[in-house]
Length: 109
Image 1 (cartoon, helix red, strand yellow):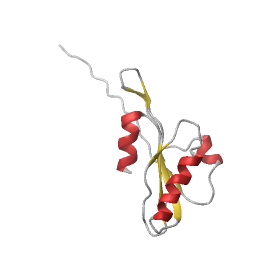
Image 2 (cartoon, one colour):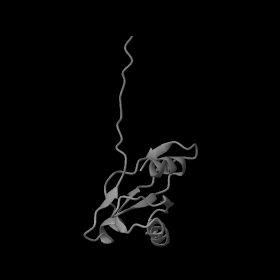
Image 3 (cartoon, one colour):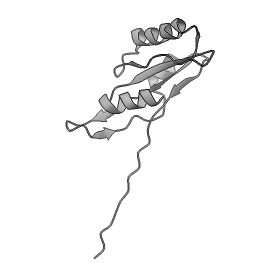
Image 4 (cartoon, one colour):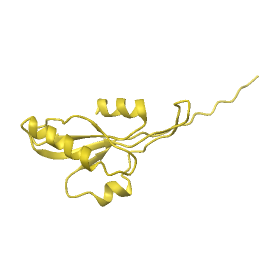
């Protein structure tokens, strides 16, 4: 999970990993907004098999929108997208995300 967050915060793109029946975790793979990550998903799942485990569930971070200076201007929330919901089955699919808090300060003289 930490690897997915670190990579998402570095480049703003979605990152995915799979978890196996025996608790092994696949490599973290990168996707693009709305691409469905099919090739990347299969690469992560094949990585589980190479470790001697079989797919159980998956998790991914949503993308972050950044400005030209690299500041986050829109956070990816921990809510499933339409793409997440349309491709889901009976297995858990975890969407990690962010919540945004705004603190207002008033200068008193």
